[in-house]
Every structure is written in C-alpha cells, then in structure tokens.
Image 1 (cartoon, rainbow, N blue to C red):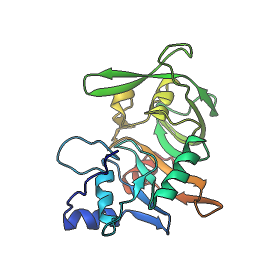
Image 2 (image 1 turned 90 degrees about the vertical axis):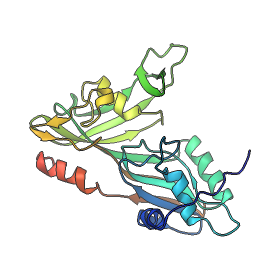
Image 3 (image 1 turned 120 degrees about the vertical axis):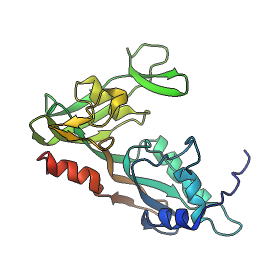
Image 4 (image 1 turned 60 degrees about the vertical axis):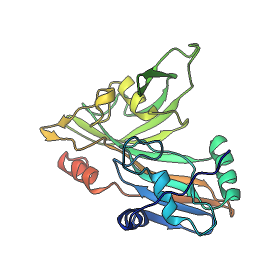
Length: 243
C-alpha cells in the first residue's frame, strides 16, 4: 500500500487543528472534532481531519492515523494513533469491540417509549448516486449488517428529549437510522427525517455529539476521554429546557 503523500497546510489550518487537541501522550492523540469537518474522504477544497493530521507529522515520520471516524456533522471525541504499533493495537481493540462510545443526542418529538432500551435492527447500505444512506432491513436480507444500539433518556421537555446513546456495533449512520426507526429522529438530521425547527427554535446542525470514549491504552490499562457538548448544542439543550 502506497504511503499517503504529505499535504501542505496553511498556518491557519495548523493552528486550527492544534487547537482541537484534548489529550496527547507518546502513543495517542485525541481531538475534539467540530461539526462540519469531515473525518476522511471529503469532497471539495476543504481539507479533511485526516489531511489536517499532517500538522502533527515529525520530519521523516508518519502522521498520526485515525482509528475510527465520526460523521461530518457529528462533533466530539476522535482518536488517532501516533505510532504504527499503537495503530495496530488500537485497530485490533476496535475490531474486538473493546471500545466503549457514548453519544448525546437531541431527538423529537419527545422521549422514546420505553425511555431506555436496546435497538437491535439490521441495516443495509443504499447507494444513490454519490450519496449513501443506511436503511433498516430484515436480518436475513443478503446485504444486512447487524446493528445494535442502547439508549436512555436523560431529560425531556415538550417536543424534545436528550438521550445518551451507546452503539454496540459501528455501522455507518447507525445511531441516526436506529433513532429514526423508533420514531425519534435526531434533530437537525433531514437525511433521516430529523426536525429542523424544534419548539420554534431553528436547529443549527445535527444534534449528535460523541461525548466519551473508553478504550484499552497501548501502554496498558484503560483510558477514558470526555468532551462536553460544543456551544451550539449546549445552547440548544438549555433553550429547550433539557439541561
């Protein structure tokens, strides 16, 4: 496999990505990704987070490598490995489902019923031109991928609820599709039926945030990293009375 070529970054881009760092040691670098920044494979002239990681490359050495991804409009904790051994260790831990991910989401039109539970609903990828969606499907569908999510209601108010989510599997758009499937789409997610206005308040973006990540550390033990919701989501939580 051909090594990725270095990307030339502006001083502003270097300062921007360095400002996202929330934790760093000899093996790992964790960032608090803002909404609107693609993890990888973005289209257009804007650099992806994967490309911005060249800001941390040492002369003659590889840049940090992404261990997992977040959707472009999802904010929160994202993990990279600074060395090849660390990347291998973390990649195997991720495949073995030894990562524990916790998300926060604002959903409409209120709390799910029951208010906590487990969604075990297979999904399939549906390509439409350059766009890809995930669709619920029978478990025996030839393209079915098993997908399991846990949820619990943290707060509710007229027309909305704040949920804590724990995906047991890592399918594309999994939480978004699962919540839409139970009739509680995430606010600000028009792709899967999410409301763009809640209780008279415009929703600025997808209200989904990767709040915490716990994983085996390459150096031993377990590491847990947490990122509070960014200002736009914190403001929406407060405005809707979910805080």
